[in-house]
Length: 337
Image (cartoon, rainbow, N blue to C red; front, side, top):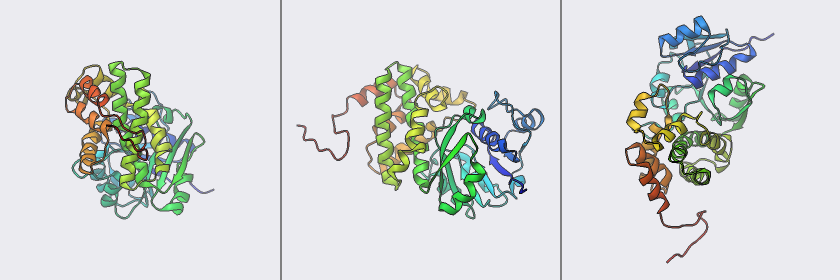
């Protein structure tokens, strides 16, 4: 009987730990790299990650380490670090894995690069894939049914290698070759989730949130088209699916951040106090700069960035509502005097 290949996971936050737990359910070994020594100790001695995923008892086949060199012999590595440090961490791998699967969602500050561009530069010998979709870490770790997009730059050949290694009875990947689209969906939905949280924190109602999701999705499509993504990708799990989940629950870190902003707390206070990363707060200023440079109309993204920079949420919402009336779809022409 063929031994199941060991998989590496780089990043032991809630999502990385959940993926390691999910991958271990078929009995394979998983090597999980963590930055914090106390997290490594807890996982190896108690089979728990009390800092990031305290409710889950972890499999004995998960081994934590602080040494990236221990992943050197692995052909499949999932990168699950915060987006802004992804490149630096990947550069620490002593050998480029055959398949590098990106599970971080964001756009690099200072460069505007998507994570696949960051990873390609940091690990040029690896074939890049992106795993993205509507996923709350505690549900994946608990074995609840989940479907995701697995976008493979190496096409069907890479999919044939990766899908059997990643799929589990309750974790179902769907194939795509649109790496850019998978990344854009995962990045922009975090910013839009902050907006939906603000709506909830201000008590503006369900109508407002549904409208914001729909108009936010239009902005996602607009940006995706400008970046060369496929509209079909953004209509799938890693775009619309992830957007609906993240914009509808306080289990979303980004939604929770927005809700607290709407309730009157400052962005500086909230970001300093969080042990987990709300990626949308880091993505919003980068995305706002990109859309302004490209002259793309994305008022919700601009509004979120304004709130994060300190403008009062109610004033920002009022400005959004006061914008000139326009067509819902770009193809519809209006002649409004």
